Length: 573
Image 1 (cartoon, rainbow, N blue to C red):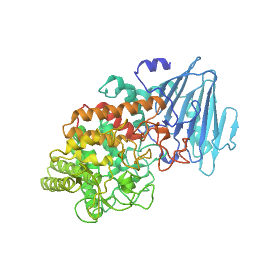
Image 2: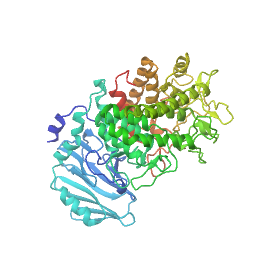
Image 3: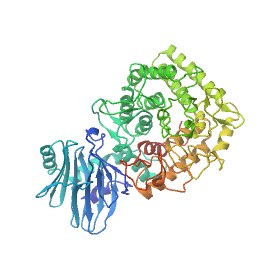
């Protein structure tokens, strides 16, 4: 039966790797982030690690090895010598599976604590967490369900026994048949893996969030994050622009009375006291280019204006028009607000006129101007265009070091930081670039002693003594690459943009085929795999997100922006 389903698809993801996120998607129905009922591929065979407050493991054992034919965020299909082992989510709380001959299934607590077992039913109770996970077996199939009580879990198991695993798997896979084609057919499987990551990390309305929203990863980040959501929306524009708008609206709706938008918000309504890079107007404008929905623009405009006014009022201490990120006391995360938590740019723990913050704000001001113009608000459009031009001119005038030919942050005394970070390329996103600067920036991009690494662009130049594999202290990040690619395109440098896009796609694909997941960041020198990169401290050598985060797996913006590169024509801006 599954062979027929498979015949209706081409190039589905087919690598099952540790850390692959496996859960029900908000694109298919209701999700429940509060439950923690999300699984990841564990480190043994096809086991699932279930990330409830007290973790469980669903063990799947094959007497004879099988062949993975499908491995998405909500369907696993393994062809065994006897028949198909298929797992498919039916709802957020229920996983349905087949049990062909030679396959066994068992449920246990990760910590080895005892569980309740009776004829065909295993129940893992966690009184402290207030939940029950139940495994019900019958000839040829099993059901795994979550409940807040044993009765609720049992009812869900019983209800699922009447469902067809084949129909459920087909429903989960149906969206893959309707994806836009990539620019190159050779990357169809990678594109579908990227969509799988997008799909599993998209959630339904819940609690304080009134519409569809997205997360960087269902585990460990779980919550909604500001600039992440913008990047997610860019790819979702290609799949369902209405959903893309909801991702943006969910973030905008968290705005505080003073205009500040928190960088992190949970479904329960908890939010942070810092913000994140102002990219929302860019995201809204890009979405409008797909939907042409002026009602969405009208809803967004006052919120976008208020957020930029908040930044102007609260993130420009020296009142020179350039913007400064909030600096924290944590040496491993000096500037969570920047999104580049532990970049050496912030090692001195001092405020800086920030090249990225100012560039992003200038771009967002320009997008706000376009939005206002579209809505017929000419005075507002002119005001925001003037502000965008003024901030753009300040970036070009005050953050460019003519001697080094690069854009740097500046401290409050007016001295350049001279930390050569990839953020120095971001002014390529702005217009009115003075003559000769694009060539000088590209010279650095192509310099093997600076930024031309095996996997460009390193977040920190090779020449800097702090260069390494720890997050923003050297590794390549897909979001920065995407922004730089767009900057190159805007400056008419399509050949260099295509080169960087090709290198990015190549390395994401390389490590997807090796590990079955899309990573948060990658060693720019490509000497070690992302599994061994440091992250706010030394790598553990063991992927256990409750002990320490390492490069997160099935990371949403890495997948979404890789998908954008696969979908977009080479000259897209």
